[in-house]
Image 1 (cartoon, rainbow, N blue to C red):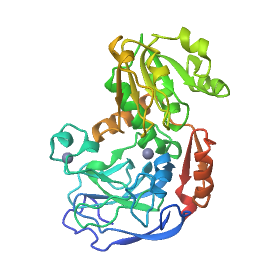
Image 2: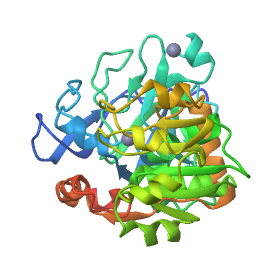
Image 3: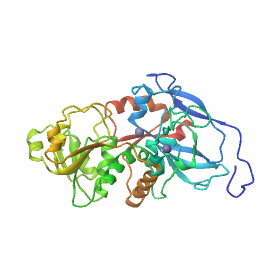
Image 4: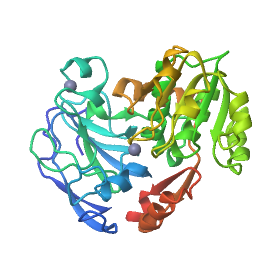
Length: 362
Ligand SMILES: [Zn+2]
Ligand SMILES: [Zn+2]
């Protein structure tokens, strides 16, 4: 095992194999696979994966819903684990560190977006954690439903000691996706914030908005989720199916985080914004019908989008969670339960994120 104490030693030149679960073609069931992890480059960190969250994107990508999938595919971009080895040029991490990897594993690091900390918008295309193409050797990247992974150090975050590693994985996608827009739009004390949709994203949105000091309302279609929302910290619940309640909440919110994962009419939600209010869409990568310019123009309202977060902000989010004791609500599963978990996730039958215990893969 190479360490920083022996800089003269070359790190292992041989690739290693890892047990994993993934899909061999679009729409196929997940099954055990063996994948190769590259030999460490000077800038690389080898990570033993302890837990990996299941994101809705994993299912979309496994089925090629977005037409960008490559196979075989080992999904998973909510990764937490421990550093087991480092390349000779690595300075940010050392063997034994608790670390985390999210949706990206590489970018050019030199373009305007990367230099500004928005690697997700890299001008030459950020490398996705899975179903991406490695920038140096052209191999297919494979994700976190596996025993270990090799990632360049700039794309590896530190996991604060205070966070339970068994619960933290979903912060790497669901967490940063909701934290980033709340921060960008300055959500804080004195503001009325609506979180639309209570799922993997929405439940993190509630926790972050509450921790940032806002007055938080869960906006949901289902009466049954009201109690859950309050237990997560929401101060109020607004039923979007209750026309009277929606009408009396018009012009009420400074900011709405819209986590609804499917196409939906946005007009009723825009109506809830105060003048100069903003609604940020993070869930629906789909058409948004019912948008009328008058709803924006007549109140200086804005509608915007947000995609995960760059690496500096992802680290900031993890540190914020460490300071405030914020963790996702999760259900832990074994790797051989992943197909059932996907089916349940599709029905919305999870509170609120599945996490795979990778010890079940040994
Ligand atoms: Zn994700
Ligand atoms: Zn770039």
